[in-house]
Length: 183
Image (tube, rainbow, N blue to C red; front, side, top):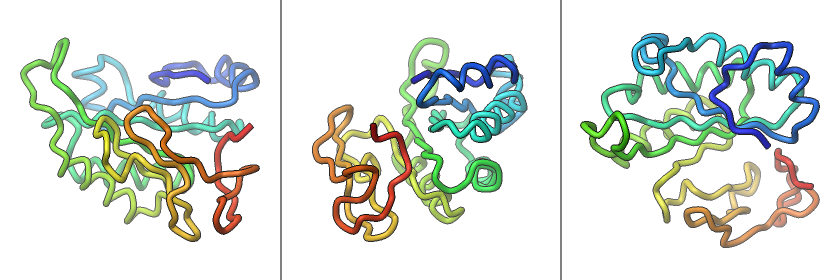
């Protein structure tokens, strides 16, 4: 498994995909301005990397740190979720994660839970199947639910698994296949 910001040239990324089971991409924003002004980079290469990962058939998850006033608009959430649906499909997990003030951004407050819930609602409305909230232990959006029977198939509290109802890649209740890496 690899964790990346997504800045990888296409050829080495394709080669790297052949050695991995999964990649988590920290998508900093869905705004070129944010990438230019805050990250001092570009959004386009990260999006291209996500598409390359998908084309290689590698399991990929996206983590989006929601930073108050910088990348937390409903418009940006909507554009992000629509892009994911169109380019990656409904089964790519998206984790909207709560920001905590530290390092260079100590002047901003923690992300309000209501903002994270809005992002998740927008993702649901866009048709994404696996939407999570991060850094909010005890929230129901930490868990994974079957898309068929809607039962909780992976229970989580923070970094701890509290229940697991998947066997051989299918829901333990209704036998619906659950996308992911299970072996």
